[in-house]
Image (cartoon, rainbow over all chains, first blue to last red; front, side, top):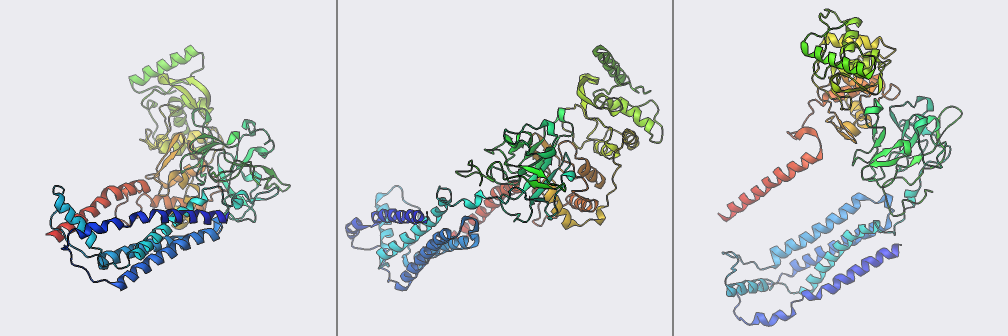
Length: 337
Length: 270
């Protein structure tokens, strides 16, 4: 898996290398000799400025590579955002610094009084020559171009590295696991266990697994009570909703927002029926049918958690979710582990 | 019992009575016309259950049924409206006061979403109707919140947890699938407390086991503070979030910056 990541980087660098030689101005030398009198005086070479440019490009390369390495060594859930941002930002800053030094100290400048002469070919040629001659200070052109290409390549590589996360080569094991299994007690945000008796109709509760990290994507639940006689849960979910109490993952299957809206009609005959709604893009789930999508961009039902009531009347999970929790990825439709 | 004050309600009531008679259903004494409130000829100076029952029969019973029994399937009422509405037996003074004092009720058509709108009953009439609805069953009384005892920061936290999903962080309202979520500006402390406990229209209710009275005080304090939220930037742009903020950035701030750049360039040239 990791090998593949390096392979992509290698191929990218090779591609960039191959594209480079076309820029070499090998055939333009004779043209320059056509006019012996130069328009721009030959500038004195500035070796220190050149070194500075090479140094900046080299630093940019280091930052770009550091980004790729950082992305490679950390697990997807623990990626250090600050470090990645810093590396990418510094890479851009170093490239910008290199260009600034080139513009300020290496290119001989000649200011044009008039606008670009689109009519006269002779004057146009003159400008082309000015552009060519302005590079006269540069003594180690190949080195500079190479360093620049390297920096550009490193930046491109760093930007493309993140694409790896979309591909089928990333370990998604942590996403498969949820803290729920048979017997885990439901608690509220303060850790108080939720009893079946206190769950009322026409309202909703947020619950978490007892003793597990509430920040995990599989942790938060939305718990509601409905009339048991009106439930039409999918086959195989008999007994999942004791006394009409249902629990669903609170993480929307579209983009992972919290399903924080509970639409509850006051008088059902003339009002929209009960639904769980995500406030981000209005994906709407039908709790009566076990979380089927009835509106919005979500592509699959809200995962339902089977419940049971223990001897002292508290709610406990009776197993794991009906499907994988959270927004989609490639094998999200397989059964949860 | 009640007779209408003006001629139009009389005609409408007569028409409604005829319609109901044709449908073979026992009609309420005077069904509500499509517009306007039906009032007894001489209202007493003090609110009473008696006045409430008369107003109810004239204005509410075509949807809520006789003595608040509710009408489950559509039944022809006044003004050609098919009356249909929930029973009010145990909703109590709390719900009656909320729906009437916000102008949610009376509703022109049972299929419409009720909004905060012009209040059609006088304070005395609302008091009388509230007394009457309370007398129908064992409902909760009108709450008496004390937002001054609440904590603003706790209110923000609780509002974010329970309310902001629909009502948006600074209570400007929004949408839920199939309905609009009202903004909360202009509602008073009592109405907010009532709404939290009863859950009007599509809103879930929040019992005391979920939001205690002390927490409710904090929430109300926060909501009332959003009537005039602090705008550190100087201009709130309606306080409704990133879309108008983005528009202002792109259509005002960016052109302004470009203008400054142009002027600087002009100055350098000249």
